[in-house]
Length: 465
Image 1 (cartoon, one colour):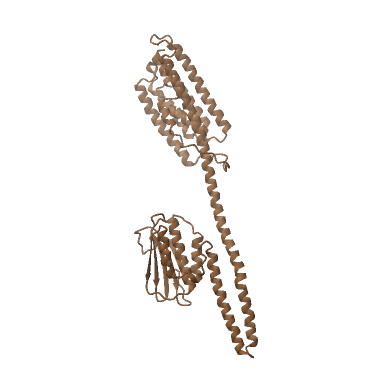
Image 2 (spheres, helix red, strand yellow):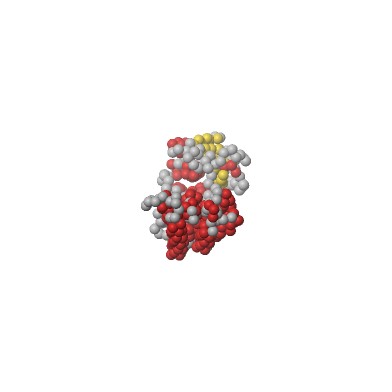
């Protein structure tokens, strides 16, 4: 065997430039620290999409192997010993198509790929570059997808040791055959020896990289599964906490109603009974008692309004309802604008006197709508408040021009707005702005609108608007 043929045998080893290029592709980025409390001790089975990707990968590598074999045949990759081009087809099939099932049967596909590669190099089939990539992917897959880590270590170790023994034998025969060549330079570090050392270093890095990256990918997949499990758990806990908050709020309301209103109601009953008793004999005294009953009723109603407003908004400013009027919206607009959400306020029509509870709840609804716009509409959002007075109704409309979260579920804030609207006999609507504003889709955003009748016993009919 000539020196050129001996070097060609070594050049067909499992690590080539193409394989080194492929070694960089399976990496998944920086090292991920394992999650201490693992929720998923094993990696989930591959999805249908991943299995389809394996088939596409095998097909792409098969085409690349055929092209590489044709070009290597033209360049006489193994010199005079290069086999016919027809042998590239079975080699390409054996080294690429097993990768189509690499995630289902990682060890079996790796054994077939390595055995096919061994036969191809032994028979001097002119294709070694894409085959190197296939071997790297096969060994990497064992470490990345096998949940039985002991079998994964044994399987990769067997393949790596077998390939290294084969490389050692090839090196021994190559040196023996080249020793008789006249063009071999004598010395401890001849070009042939240096070339062999380079091949060994490359192969060590090649197999070591496939081994390490496979383990890294497996740990990263477990980390991602753990994080998804934690996210799902946190979402369930958040929903449970919201439900518990509503239940606790109802308990607080019941307790406070008993303490605050119960006293007034019982006192009113006693006073009404006393007034009925003395009405015939002392009408003047009965009138004084009835005035006390009237004043107690007014006080109970005022305290009830204050209680409900406080319990519905535990995190907001604990002011009495009577302290919040619609003219305070101008101050609210200035505060929201100063916080980073430019907001405008427009009053349409002549203002008319409104009950304190109506003014308070309209203010709170506007406050909640602006809070949601600031939280969810994005940094570039703009908001607008319009207060319309009509002869028999008043309408508050709050819009923003920010993004709309697709599929967002109603939260506690929206539930509170509905409760406020119901308590004053109003009709509340909220939704995507482009789906509501007279068919206009000029800008995206969100809309909150409440209409409140001013005349007693007046109601609105539910419409799609």
